[in-house]
Length: 237
Image (spheres, rainbow, N blue to C red):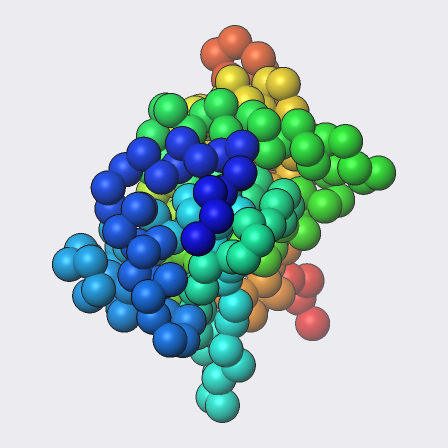
């Protein structure tokens, strides 16, 4: 196999990701997360994280199988040949993942730079955030099943992603006091904040109760950082 020329080859520095890529290349069909995890002996959440980074670097492609019944699409992964760029989905995978190590911050910045050069970076990033929503863990689905309010679902999601959310008593306003990619967002605000807005919109839309994101104010204050999310309940009949 010819040497890969992806500018993001540092993603393969981790043994687990190198092993995942080798497993995908050895398979005779695209693998689901469970199959990929079993192939290299790691948990599914770990495999999902590493697969997202491989996708972000253009080394792996991700496709969704349509389900006969309602529910999330079943995602499959296969090696990209030749490695593609898929800049919008790369940004969505990285700038929305609080668990991404610090050393991937530079990569996220490079990807955000790519998207910043498009005709409408904010709109493209917003759409990327909506598409990325099916990648989120089952915690959101569990919150829906419990009947949690939209504010509770969003607060729980943003807490898991590292935004240090704070609900304002007596309202559906949520204040975000941290951002896992703050330094990248300060340079590429339309892209990073656009991804997060799309993620929020898709989350509340999935609740099916008519709730919408009524307001989103990134960097309401610069120092200390504060972003504000406002939810709007469905109008009464």
